Length: 457
Image 1 (tube, rainbow, N blue to C red):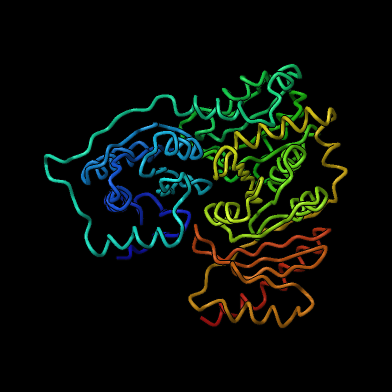
Image 2 (image 1 turned 45 degrees about the horizontal axis):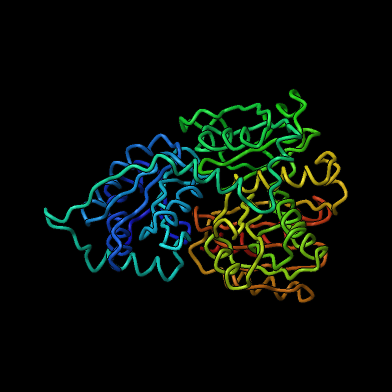
């Protein structure tokens, strides 16, 4: 069964509220997930949401849908996506549903499907779950309906688990009394980030920590969107600025000099911290900056690419026995806590690095080789993209070509990656070079066959 206008991928099912995404659609997918996840006998499903305006409505819908297939709903209320994942593990639940569209604009919402392991569903698991949309969702009879219980302590447990990380010198961080500028973008970060930073002895200067879902800027924490946080860092003489997306699985940084570092530096700095204490493989997706690869090389550990998508990176990390990994969008995954992107973990690891370095973050970053990453997008053509990939491989025979997720062409000092988005009806074109001119030249070269294909259809 297909629903027009919905984006269905390993990132979940998402759409514009009142357009493709309606209460009826949410109920159908939630019921299918509940029936599929509980087929093994465990009846509990964890449910949580971010701060989006439509979240409360969809929560009521999801609760009823899960009850209709006999689930025991464990509601954690407004919570970060990683908190919901950890709650699935804590309760040994059959799975979880996160009601969040992550970094998408305010008019979007979504369901993210979490398996019993705390990982998002793989492509195969997602296909098996969605098969119930065609074969029929088995509903509970009146005497087998589910019910709702409330878990008020999910966020508290998450904070405690972060503070218990073996790499974290909590007493040392508290003694430093770091000054932190914080922008939660009116998202679920407001329920966890101020608490975590206060527990680490930080003096917090927060803006937009109200959890009303009325985003004051584009919710994606890219450098272009962090001007207000940059000013806050300068005006408060903060040691670092932290910005989260609405569901708190991504963290972006602003240095003590009041300049946004770019999301890729979050993972690079977190990896630098962890690899000092526990060397091991590093895994990132194909759209991640070379700054992360450089950190792995300097530490003398293996480095691996995975497809874009949190679950793809998590599975690759599990397969390679990775010590740390994540995505260049500010998503840090530390498997010692859980195999999921986690902004609170990223923040704690960055503070630990600042403690160990005992110098400004801007100085730590300045000694690294700098790259410039440029991100572009085009409307997704109806025709297959294979012709574009083939033309680019032929045009650049000297580049290393990786085709596991679209096409990435790699040189020692630059790369370009083309892939269809799993969350929007677009093709993403991302390039990186030693200078902005180098990156933009790669973007232009990659766009040419793509634009030709789009025109042709």
